[in-house]
Image 1 (cartoon, rainbow, N blue to C red):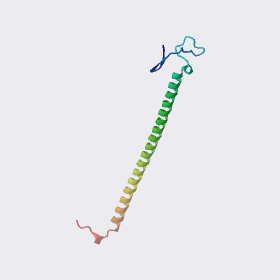
Image 2: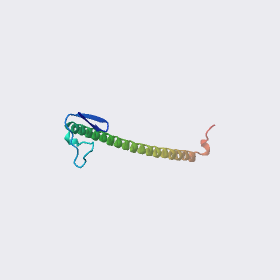
Image 3: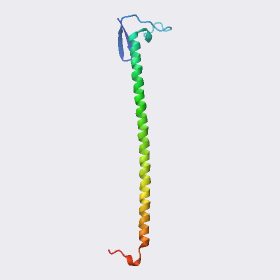
Image 4: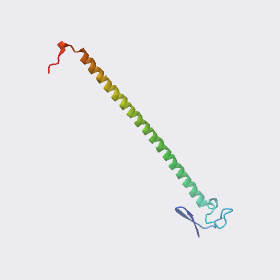
Length: 106
């Protein structure tokens, strides 16, 4: 029984393993020659594709969250500026309308 090493996995096969052409003496067999490895590689590709898709979705979500945070801060500063400006305007208008007879008792 021979063992094939794929980074972190060991797969036992009963059939002899053919080496890739041009690599005589190499310890790495051709993946298509072993059906178990073919299905394993297909599953690894599926998992990798799925994880990349999840990473892409997470990155897109983070980008939208950042854009929302920027818009939120912009709205905050615009609101604060308008509030401050209108406060100054109303107080100055109220002060200019006071006359001698409208003294505030204090």
